[in-house]
Image 1 (tube, rainbow, N blue to C red):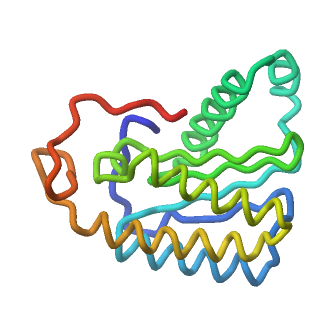
Image 2 (cartoon, helix red, strand yellow):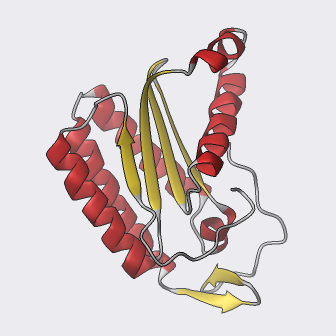
Image 3 (cartoon, one colour):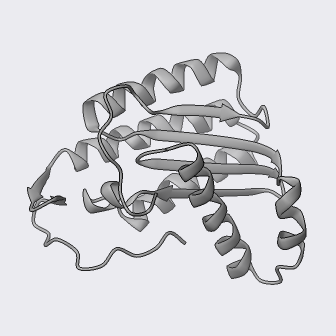
Length: 178
């Protein structure tokens, strides 16, 4: 998944709300908005929530001592989930217990100019709304933030096989999610 994504005719954006954070109406609206953004700005978005960790991951997680180790655990799980779902673009993984939110982007989206700072901005906005238990508002904010990102990404240009933001050189190496 980190190695790139191909174009697809049907929208790939989706929300799988296993932890039931969001109202059905908010999910329907956000999926429509994600699909619109995907068609217009070529940003596919998949958001998954989980009540807890899968049984096969709990022991490994329990052994992690540092925040860095836990962040790496969630980054690896995000990549695993993205590959399993054939996800393209942006992937947001949220668990209720343990409380965690992780945002990742495939290499194609990062090559088009989605930065770590933008992923962090998206993450911070969601975390703030979740702390206030304003889950539906967090979903709406996510759409608004992605709309801003799509406008910026629309200013990118093609350099070889990569999309590169205006005024920037094509990167030599793409950093891993984390």
